[in-house]
Length: 203
Image (cartoon, rainbow, N blue to C red; front, top):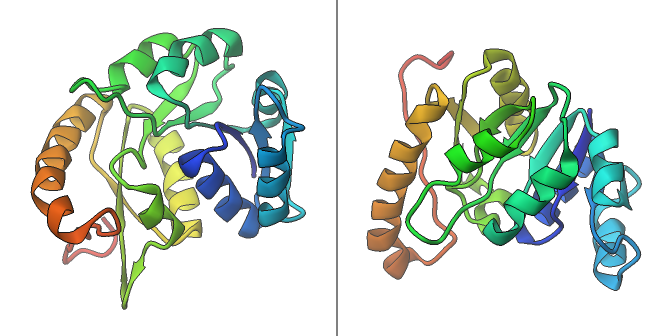
């Protein structure tokens, strides 16, 4: 699958590198695709990765990962324009107590938005395995087919995807995870995670 990563920092760089390593074709979209940072990332990502401008990456990708700072969301999505029914993975977070979910849904023109990875630190994404089990990634969105695609991409990099329903549910998940983070991160740091245990393995 062709994946555009709009963002090449901890989140975008980690996810893009992992997908490239699992056989997907990844283009990192950057304002400076010739920078030393991008060259280093491409070397780490292997032959399936390349870099271009944000517009290059959006044209390239069947799936677009939005992994930018909250201050950049509006600018990037305005620059992106019509996304022509492509899948947009929104892993952005705001740091003012508000959800970035509704903001992206409003700004992403004609995109099938799936919200995920925003409740996971990049350290967990880089290594989601904890002994015999792996970390859960919560997925929300209003397009079942888009969520299936993102669920498979999550499995490809070792995550346990759990569909939590429509876009209106993600803010509840974010609130719950934020409360847990405030309690657990002082004890366990950033490299801890959760796994949803269920008896029906097909869920």
